[in-house]
Each structure stands twice: as structure tokens, then as C-alpha cells.
Amino acid sequence: MRKPFYNTPERIQSLAQAASRWLGTPFHPHACILQTGVDCVNLLAAIYQESGALDSWQFPAYTMDGGDHRIVSQVLEWLDCHPRFERLPVGEALQPGDLLCFRLGRVPHHVGLLITGNRFIHAMRNYGVIESQLDDPTFADRFVAAYRPVL
Image 1 (cartoon, rainbow, N blue to C red):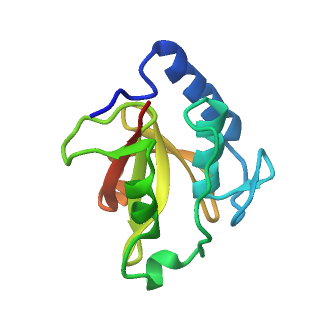
Image 2: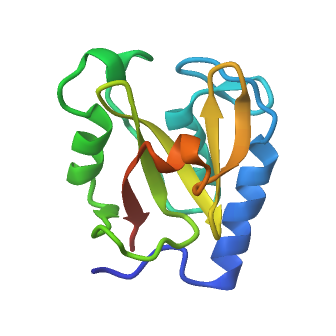
């Protein structure tokens, strides 16, 4: 496994600061405007870019209901091919900055970003950008995979 990007207190602090700026932003499909509108994919892109983990993020076109009608997860396909992410083995301890994948519908179609401990940030329809706990049954039962941004 390659070295994690969030490997210093300064980088973890930058991640937390970038994430906190987005809290309360309304949910809006395919948008990425701070305090105006964002979806889960674009939220993570913005935080990773602001905190230095990624220079760019070109996720393929997607629909909000893709988890309901696809038979393969577009999210997992993209992450498995991305050179700056490594899929974590099942049971691996999670670290700040890890990208969390959740099943919505038939396949994983929702993402969140671990901030610290079990706390993660994500954007949800009807809620906007919120923090949640990974051990909350709503999310624990839907958690499928984690990916780590690497150098």
C-alpha cells in the first residue's frame, strides 16, 4: 500500500477546515458552489482539491438515481481505476481523508469523507451537507467500501 496523502497533522487539519466550510450547503444535483449547492460527488471533489489531495476530479456523467437502475456501481468502477485512490481491504482501520462508499438502491452510489473517528461529511438530498456517524445504523448497514487518497 502506498503512503496516504493525509499523513501529517497539518494535512488532516487542512482537510477538516475545508470540510467544515461546506457544512450547511444545500443539496443540488451536479452542482459545486459553496453555501449554494452541491451533491455528494462534487462535495468530495471540492474538499480534496482545497486540501491538496487532488489537482482535478473528472468523474463521468451520472444520474442521481443511478444506484436504483445500474447493475454495477459507477462509483466503484471509477475509484478502482483512479491512480490516486487505493481500495482498502475489508476490516482495515479507517483514517481521516478516506472516501466512504454507501449502497443506495442496488449498488454503491453515495459517497462520504471520513473526518475523524467515525465522523464523516456528505451531501444528501433534503438535508444538504451534514456530518454523520459511520456507526449510525442508517449508514453502517449501507457501508460497502473505503478508498484512501495516496501519494
